Structures are given as structure tokens and as C-alpha cells.
Length: 142
Image (cartoon, rainbow, N blue to C red; front, side, top):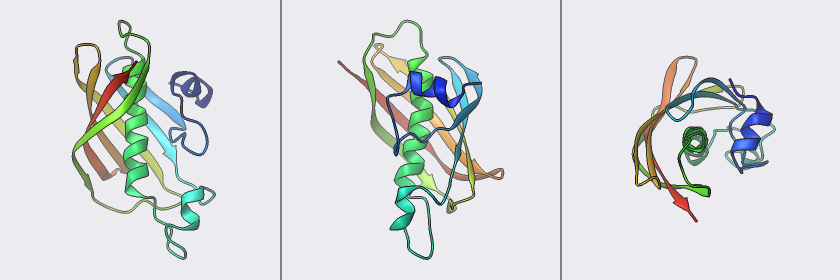
């Protein structure tokens, strides 16, 4: 398990773009399960959408990417540097995410090539129902 303080030590993201609140399962370099609590206080809900707040799909994908980043940053033999989001494959949105929901995000490392490029399988669910899934790629920036 990783606390929000430990997550901040591993990821460079800060408010309002820190989208992982807690890691509840963790196999460093292999797999992670994390929580993102969705609250009405978040700035995107002022305009997305007034009277019907919905979490933007791009932020759901970003939250999944941050969990994937936690896996990659925990790998012991990788060079130091910043891993950035490099691509998405097969991402599908299945149901809306609204304030009050708790996203449970599961990521599993699929591959790591030349110690610079990683791919994870990611899924996000709310109350046990899948809301988003796909594969996310990362690249090391020197």
C-alpha cells in the first residue's frame, strides 16, 4: 500500500493534476491497484458540465496512466528520467463517472522494451462495474 505522500515521492504530478489518492495493492514493477476519489470540488466540474458534472474521459485515462507510471517508476534497473505518456490503444469508455464515485484503477505491466518504453493494461471501475479500459504506453524522456 502507498499513501498520498509516498505517491507524491514517486510521481511528478501535483494539484490539480495529481489523480491517484492511494495505492491499495502493489507489486513493484508488475502491478498496482489504486483509488481516485472523484469529488465535486475538482476544477473540471465547473465547466464539464454545468448542471450535469461528468469526469472527462481524458482525465480517467490520465488517472490510469499515473497508476501505470507508479509501476514503471518502481522498476529497479531503469535509467533515471521522466516517463511520459506516449500512446493509447483500444481505450473504451463504458459508463459515466460522476462526483461521489470512487474509481478503482488496476494496471498491469505488459512489456518493457530497451528499458525506455513500457506498456500497461489498464482498467478503471466504479462499484465493481468497468468504466474504462485499454492499453497505455510510456516513454523515457532524457
